[in-house]
Amino acid sequence: LQAVGIANVPVYGVQTDGPIIVLPAAILRDDDFVYLFERLVERLDISTPLGAWHYATILCRLAENHAKVLEKKFEEVRETLV
Picture 1 (cartoon, rainbow, N blue to C red):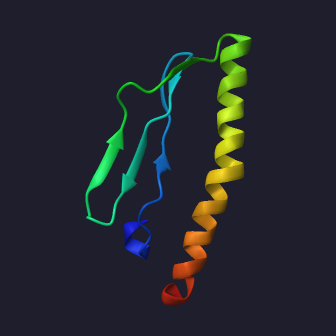
Picture 2 (cartoon, rainbow, N blue to C red):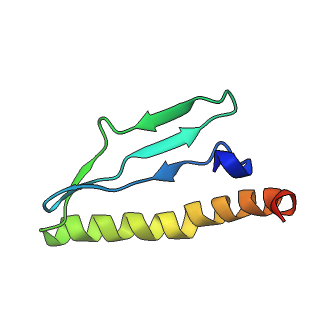
């Protein structure tokens, strides 16, 4: 995102160890430091119905909320890319 001029938007990843999933995040701030959030994040066990439900709802929230923020930021810098 830094290459296209977008900052202050978190980027999420997925780490797995069998059925255990962790969703770390990273964010580039205006001070040009990348902040990583991978400690003390909640671990989800998708082998259980409740764990699978939590994982699915997190992905839905990211798609619904975070994607809109990222799309807005991209639209702000779109003209400079074309």
